[in-house]
Amino acid sequence: MSGVISESERVRIVRDLHDHVAQGLAHLKLQFELLPKTPEGIADEIPQLHATVTDLLGDVRLTLRDLRQA
Image (cartoon, rainbow, N blue to C red; front, top):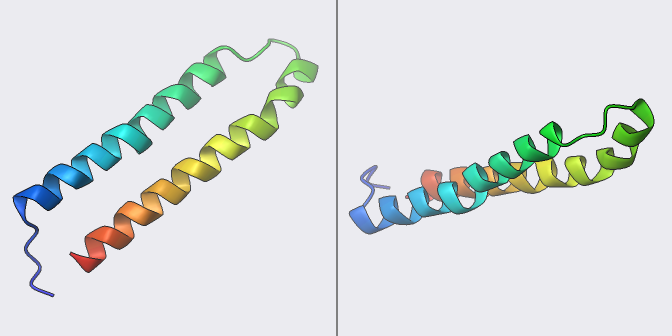
């Protein structure tokens, strides 16, 4: 492992972070802002919010794994 990341690899990582993580976090933020004001309504939304967070965590882990291998 050389520890040097090529320019094309940097571009790919930035694109992955933008396309998956940043957009996913923006979506999650919007979902939180749109949550109903009642506890019952919030409870209905929890499974989808949990799935979104789980997907984002997976994306971050994949990106970190790729960085370690670069």
